[in-house]
Length: 194
Length: 219
Length: 226
Image (cartoon, rainbow over all chains, first blue to last red; front, side, top):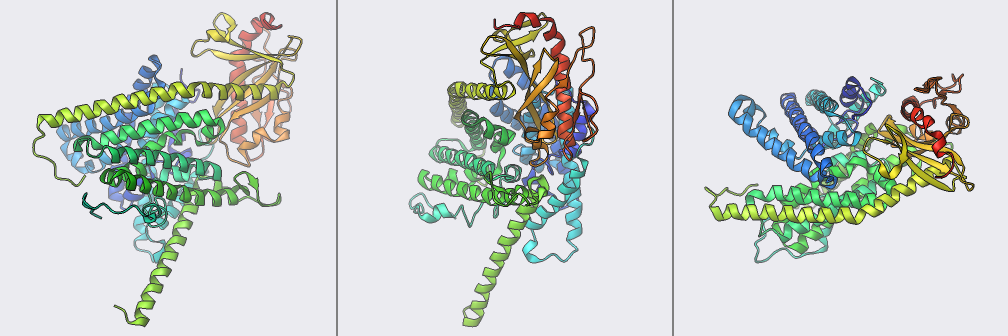
């Protein structure tokens, strides 16, 4: 089955045109919190990408199973449980086989499980009817888009530490405005990739 | 705010109002951002989303409060997540049955209510530690605050971006809509503007209190 | 999350955990199944209503609507549909004569999926109208596909003739820049809403290419109301 879009279109769409953070408003809570420093932003982005891809893969097979048994109404709840479990598993495996990586990413992994940017790609890929290859490319694109957005914002915020920001704007207001400007910039990608 | 089980805090109007102003989920706690920005480009969608989220919040808070002595500590989060996902799925189907147009407009964001940090955070941090009535009333207050916040965003975005309010044309046909307000950047900008305004009001209030204390010599 | 963890959970605690999780799972499964069953008739009714309204908009003289599916062996009644088969509605007027066929087309537009129904008339071998079912495109731009009179005029007689072999369209439907339409199989885009307009052209082309060859072969079977 699968939709008619090419793999490249799907990827570009997820990264630039409909960036998950800046166009679809997903993953914002962690985004606004973790983007304060560039050094924390990048590992977070990579962790999120990894979890999205694992979750997406599990969700694809889960959907096949659910469709076979005509149990579509259990979709949301089973996705959540599977993603949370996948995150736990990933955490345990990483702790055992890549402890250095685990220590670097460790704090962020549990937080990611309840991040909307992780649940969204599986939901979207199901709604659009993507096949396995398209789903994987889509979730890779979602993750890369998240990394791009978070790294850009972190860079901007670090610069602003040196600037003279009025006290009313400090904190949430400024970050949100910055995100708005980034979002505006990303709108320029509309139509890219067909 | 530790309250012993022997004398729980009385359920007052404040329990409800706390969620609207002092602990407003959108403007103060900055939780539940994802749906806030995504569906707030029209008043009707914003209010519908707010109400759907508020209903799930109240239901989840009631559940968490009722079962707070029954659920073992280690599985609390998992249980809450499953219960919230159940309520959200129910909400999803109910909206689909009531209005196809609304369902199409809100789209995937109904299902994303389940990962709205507002709900899990409030349920885990607040409702699971309180008796039923205060928990539910407070959840209703926070939910109302959420609807209010979404309304503020939706009203500005729809008015400036489309010249309409809940579908009714306010300005005349020669009004040039400020289109960016309806698009994602507009969501960020309007939220930022509201945050600026509220910060300014708070700062002005704090300044007034400080000035009064200085002039009256009160330490 | 700030409580001190117990040192070693005794087995009664494990039992409590299992009972809790099992109980919650059961309760939640029950609630979901109940909700699904209760809301299903309403959801189906809403969808049917939406399709009816759209079909009437395209063919106002429709008295009855009969659904068919296009399978590998041609047209069959819609009740026998298997997943993946294309649904096509036949609109019959008061006298039982076929006014036209209505089928669904969908594609990704600017901000989401755009779904519409289009009418095809076998007499003129052309598309005679569209009715947008679902669209979350930009208000004032992409959403004009349902209201802009010049855009809708594209579909009064959009050429969808089949080639001599009957396996594909003679001229694929394509969207062209606003104001440059010269042929009957072109769709003149809305100025400032190129992406949405292109999506409409693309979905119409895809749907007709997939549907019309099979439908044309079995057309005589459905010319009068079965």
